[in-house]
Amino acid sequence: MGNNSITKTVWNHIDADATIKTDLARDIINIRALARYLMTKKKVRGSIDSIISAIRRYVKERKPSTMEQKFHRMFDQAKILSKNNVTSLTLNRRAEKYVARVLDMSADKDFVRVSKASRWIKIIVEDSHLKEVLKVIPAKHIEKRNEHLAEINVVFDERIVKQKGILAKIASEIAIQQINIEDMIIVPPEFLIYVQQEDMVKTMEAILALQKKV
Image 1 (cartoon, rainbow, N blue to C red):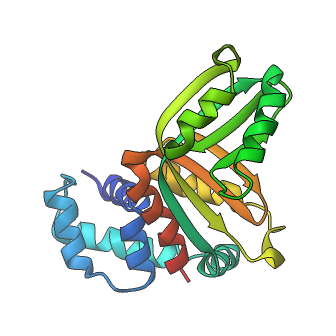
Image 2: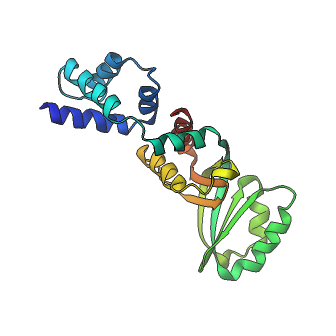
């Protein structure tokens, strides 16, 4: 494998692993140990020295830009909350009056999230309250049901939520981990992200890694 090919392969592996990227940025990872890991676990073909050289070039050439550093400071100030066991219901617009009843039911308990589009209403419910919600909303108005979800709530400082690119940054970091975002609700300064429960830990790690890249 030529040097250019080794470099490309090594950089692709680093870009795909938020933890490695963070540790390299903070200079807390042993480069020789990382090179051995890439050789043995990721099957990167090449000499240990050529892989080490590719890692060092990555660190030198991919230092965070001023904008990247600004993003990382923003995420460092953010509060990240999470919960398991939620279900997403997609409703037709004829369900609107029933959604109003559900919101009244949840006024003191905060177990429902709602967003509306031109054709659909999305309602996200904690599973512990799902049965009582389903008693209110007729089945004929439920177009889709997505279960076994987790909610990650990223709450930013209100002074910086007008910064462009926050949503794209979150989505990009999650996509690098090959995680599908099932739903999102954005009401600045809160960004609510819904993924499958099995992906919750990796999603949290991806977002928390953004806090560390200062």
